[in-house]
Length: 345
Image: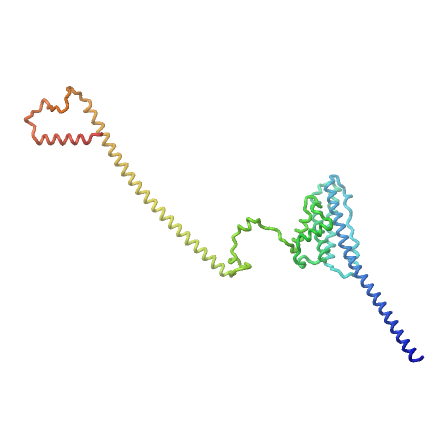
């Protein structure tokens, strides 16, 4: 074999080995991709399987509510072969989320059995219906966490807008009126919030009037976001000073009220004394007037024998003109003046 033939043989052999290696690598890559696609398809099949079971359960609950004489044959058994296959295989997946889905299936099956027994025994299925609807809401919440967030814990997801959850349910034909007597989308949102998912916006806790009527002191709040924060010791000192100030204010107010009461009592005593004195004077004047009134008829009953003209001077028969002195005249005039002054007008 010549040297040229040898190099040709070596070159051909190396090229063939390279081609064979590339073929094997491509085949392995195809197998890996198909395996990954199979894993993705299997995991998607779990969400599809759970969604179908939930939609069928919602439809069955609506039929039981609409039909008065519904029988247990309306409720079909729950089957989940896709989940069983994934659990049996060595697929790398979130096993915690798969366990949650398995528990959800167990709850759905238990509620279906209880509702089926109530319908078979002709009992009132109200309580069983409520439990079944609650299990359905839990199932939809579990399906959302598995399909959108890969089965992560609600506390690990972060902030999610509640309208995104509603749009997801709308895309899967979970309408607001799917369950009788409930608003399904609102219930699912509240259930996710109860599980720890941070949904925004948060529900309102106060009306506008209540919120703007609140008296909030950000300087007194230890956890205030702005302003100077007070330590617990400072808060206790401020509370003690406020109590002392309130006690002093109450004492001053009580003292002021006592002074007002004393002044009012003194004024009332003075007014009572003045009123009593005035009443005494009035009683004395009325007594004097009554005395004069009692004496006046004695003089009025005396008959007048003669009539006298104005300016006529007369004397009694027993009196002598020579016996009247100047002192007697003065005394008589004084008596007449006193009598005229004491007579009532």
